[in-house]
Amino acid sequence: MAAAIISAPGRLRASRLKLLPSSLSSIMARMAWFKRDKKAIQTPVDEERTVRTEGLFTKCEDCKSVIWKKDLEASFFVCPKCQYHFRITARQRLEVLFDDGNYEEFDAELRSSDPLEFVDKKAYRSRLDSAVRSTGSNEAVVNARGTLNGVPTICSAMEYRFIGGSMGSVVGEKITRAVELALEENTPLIIVSASGGARMMESFLSLMQMAKISAALARLHKARLPYVSILTDPTTGGVTASYAMLGDLNIAEPKALIGFAGPRVIEQTIRQKLPEGFQRSEFLLEHGMLDAVVNRREHRAFIYDWFDFMGVV
Ligand SMILES: [Zn+2]
Image 1 (tube, rainbow, N blue to C red):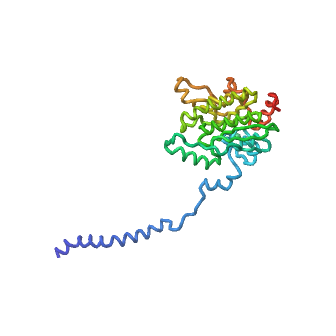
Image 2: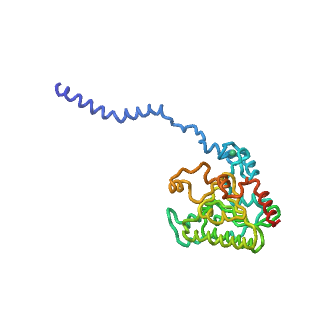
Image 3: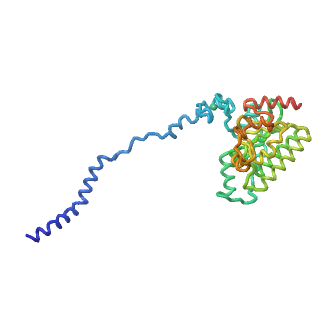
């Protein structure tokens, strides 16, 4: 009896232990009542919701108003409400400038040969390949000839989406060729800048382009052929320090960022706070660095009037 009493708790424990797996499973079965066995109702996430309207509307990055994309295209990608200038591609730029959006591209086949076999986080060659795929251009500038209000004109338009519109040896070569073609065909030249500056992956070869293009522009100047530089958002570094500021007429789009070094670098160097609107088109115009700030919708008419003034019409 005593043995039975002593052994009873032990037996009990054993029987509890034996029971445990089955009781756990019964608890789990009851837990299922709380859990959702069926798949939850799928509600579309925000991204999916916007897909349906993606092709039709866009939001102004400045005033935040919703704009019908067709309206935006018709106004050359300038917000009809606040005049904010959206960044546009090189090809869209050429369509804005040339009559009926028609132009003939030249030197499209030129590509960088990666002379320094440069590798940073990624190989330069693979950066080039992905830029070619995403922009449909072989380099960060598109050369074209066409007519501007009937005036035959050569234009080099920079493509910011191609490695930040950086100026490598091919960009330099293509712009130089555009200048030389303007000389050969006796036509005015327009260069549209949109660039983060020289291309570090080509090191000194990029820097040499500043001198090369400037020398070609000097020949154009000697031949008394007009050169219009259009500075768009953003125009910085070696591009600002060379051909973008060498135009017979230097015009910029409203509120475009134009400068050499970035504002933070300047602040740290001179140890002073920079004034409001520093490095924007309007500030530069006020300080004599530009001839005019012109709305993109007026570019063609403005340049044509100036061609007329220069006697090329
Ligand atoms: Zn707006």
